[in-house]
Amino acid sequence: MDLKDLFGRVKTIPNTELNKDNWFEKQPVKKIKIGTIEFYLNQPSSTFWVYFLGIIVTLAGVKFLQIQGKEISRYWWGISLILWGVGAVIAGTSYQAFGYELKCARKEVCQWTSWWEVIYLIFQQVSMNAMTVAIAYSCTTGVFREVLIWYSIILSVLYTVVTFVGAFIPKKSLITFEFMMLASLPSFILFCVLNVVRYFQFGYTMDLVLIGSWVLIYASWWGYDKYYKAGITEKLWAKGKWFSENDVLHVILIVWGFYVLFLMPEYIRDYTYFLK
Image 1 (cartoon, rainbow, N blue to C red):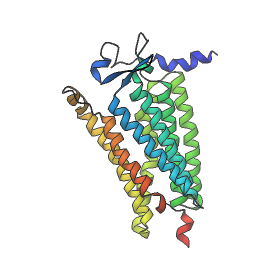
Image 2: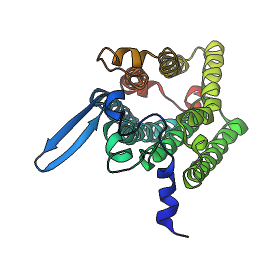
Image 3: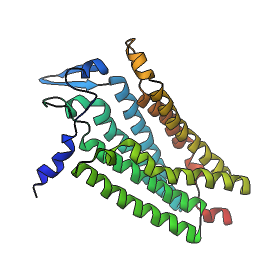
Image 4: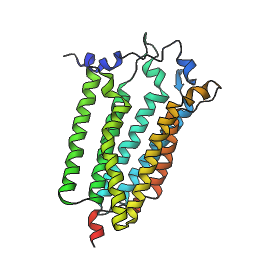
């Protein structure tokens, strides 16, 4: 088997919306020249937002690791947030910053995705699964905890395999942002239900803080969806202003990132802490 051909198949999925004739009309692109190097920076403002998000969330992950102490849940929050933050930078490199250079420049037909985006999807999903492990250590015990941990491990492996298969075949539906969100949805619903039930049952501040985190994450997804369906990106761009549905998602997640960085770490504890 020719590995170059295998890994190159994902590049054969054509972009049905963007091509060399309309790429510069559909979104802002700025030509950058540094010495003898020239390249096109795609969506400059969107690049700023997604990279800033990546930095903030990565710093939050590092903070969790720094103050871990004896709390296993803080360790897994740290791993989750670092994967999320690094994944955001990887995503921004292809979806935004170097989208044209990676997917259209020097090509006869612009491609729909790249390996940067495939790797991002895996990072994001594994991040959610690491978060599930963190919640398992904070909010559950016994068999329920073991089930959540094994669920996270199995889902990480299965999703990674399915995503690679989707890239190798290639099959577009298996390597979409929407499919990744669908795979994450059961964990997110569990987080919401578990922390709401625990808060009304025990009144722990940790659960209330976690509920705030889930509200912000949901708000980012809700804002993205409503903004996209309303076609506001195109309406603004027709007036020469750029603020996309991805920007809505990233700006709200930046608020979440600051929330996680400055508020959450001190409140996150293992389940055993509350038994003292």
